[in-house]
Image (tube, rainbow, N blue to C red; front, side, top):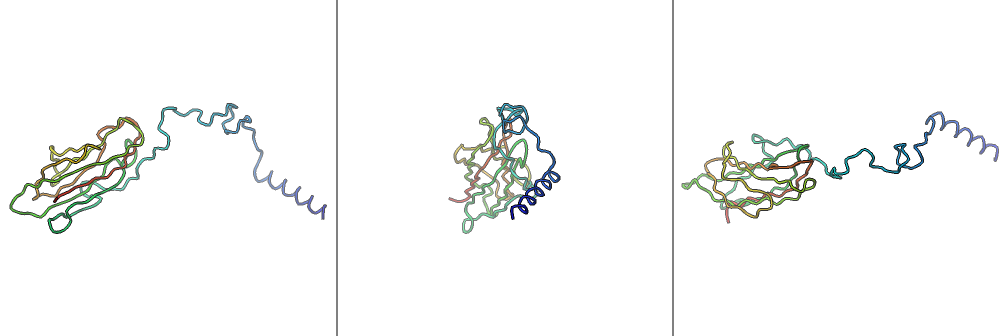
Length: 184
């Protein structure tokens, strides 16, 4: 039995050395870079954000919004949409469409808020811009964590909110929650 076990171990050792090749010494520090300093992060920017992952590209656009909501006094009165964007890599903007029933008064006052959590650039900011029938309504910029803003929209047009970065100097991910209240 002892001879068979010895032959088996010898055969196993030969097979392993043929299949794996020679094992090289990396300098003995265990980090695998061969410099002997034990510094795992050698060659990386020490100021680079750690663990910031770009938001997956979801394919939405002004012409193809991620969600569409029809709001009315007797139906959907408000909605919340939560997603992620990132800059400069990944999904840089999101679009959510909403519309109101046409009535005799074309002006609709709505409440909009954008609650944000950033990972990356501490000075980054994001905003909502509302488009009406594909044209920017310049009076409707809402920034992150600015509370609820009251804005006027033309309810004879389709509204689309674009969430995007206003500024980001390095890779930054934004997890946000957009809330639109059409009727109180």
